Length: 123
Image 1 (tube, rainbow, N blue to C red):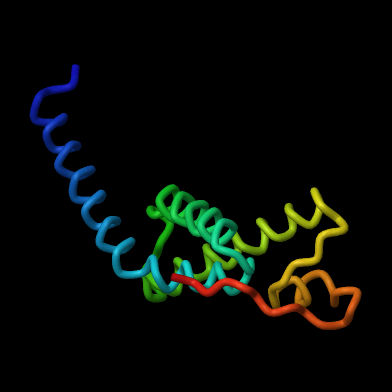
Image 2: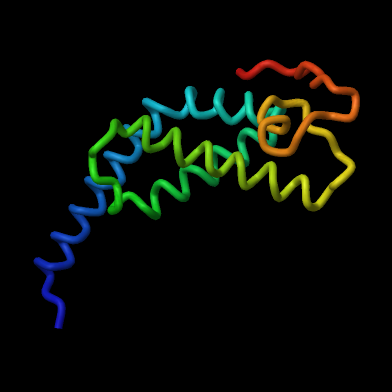
């Protein structure tokens, strides 16, 4: 049977973990959003990528070994999420051309040979 002390200890640990992750989010969200925006080319897709990256980071937080900075770890997670997002979007809409540099890096050049500039700026 679980004692009241065990429940209280687990509750304190989860509270501390949530506070730590909130701090990490506040410190890094803007930079990760800007990265996602540059890769996807629009605000809505960037928000989707960052949200997925934060979920992945939260799920894999126990695997963070501290060999790099937390930002580097989050950067790599966001980069991988953006890559998966763009790849998935390209598969579901093969005729769509993305207005972002990563499209050219991973999928080749646009039909016109140039990539149009994004018409939005990150907040």
